[in-house]
Length: 413
Image 1 (cartoon, rainbow, N blue to C red):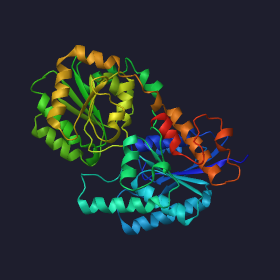
Image 2 (spheres, rainbow, N blue to C red):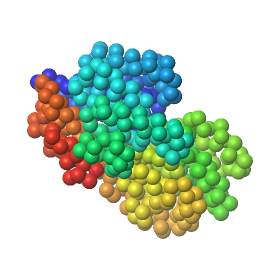
Image 3 (tube, one colour):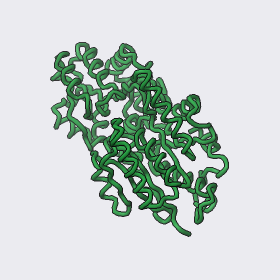
Image 4 (cartoon, rainbow, N blue to C red):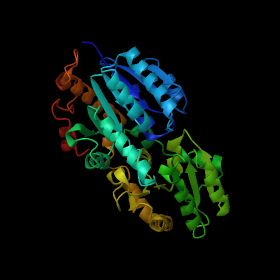
């Protein structure tokens, strides 16, 4: 039986959940059943990791960027079309907004039999001006016409896509963005060295957020949280791990609030399990999300969370059991919940005791196996020669070729 050729396309391999999801999938697909290629921008913090995958054909595209630039975008479309011609995939699987639109158009123009698109949160939201948001929604509706199937990382994203008319319910399957749970579950003790490196006292309560410094993640809300709580908890420390376009603004806000001794912003860290192990609790202040992997990671480390209840967050955080949910944008409620946890070690211990429960559906290997089953089901339905179909693929969770959505319905996403 010939192997199915699958090309993944993502805009930039920066440090983020969608990028980690894509790289883990590309690296983990069974090479006995799949040939794999990756198309992406020629820059990004995770590009070196992609380059280390010797058995993945890589197409680095110099004109593929997040910003809307019509001339460069046309050139990127041409680059994607040439990559598809060179690799001749049976399946193109796109991720992120820009690569999602251009990649699906390129696949349509090159007559690729099967086109899948992953939703890691939508590229439009209430933070945008109404005309900009409307343009993004219109582009997604157009691209949906060229899409065979959708993969959503949360039920919330799947339901929103159906509600907005981006796709039909039977076109979409929920497959969680998988995390290497074993790596995070075995992190105990790793945080001590990180605290020493950053000058954080061993006994100091530590509130942590890990996020890209971009509008979606609203990191300025974390600075405001630190400003609200530092006077009440002078021994507490705050750690904002990440980087991005908003760093100059965040540094100004930190200075204006007099938080230089309380709030550290060390940039990106590759020792994220150690970051969580050092934490007393973890927060998330995002405006919108798909399903934030950082919450799964921190819970796997046994650390309770306080998060704004956007999109798929409520599918990870069980309010009052492993953390707390607050209304989106409600900084006062966030400060109240975090303050309550800082003041009550017994409450923290109770939430931490349940933090790691119910995370198996977020396992990285389970994510890859379910995507393999989906590819084979879609290929079989398209009549692609050599497609194994779900029965011979060896995975009991494979979706029936005629009813993708049945899997999401049985598993609850």
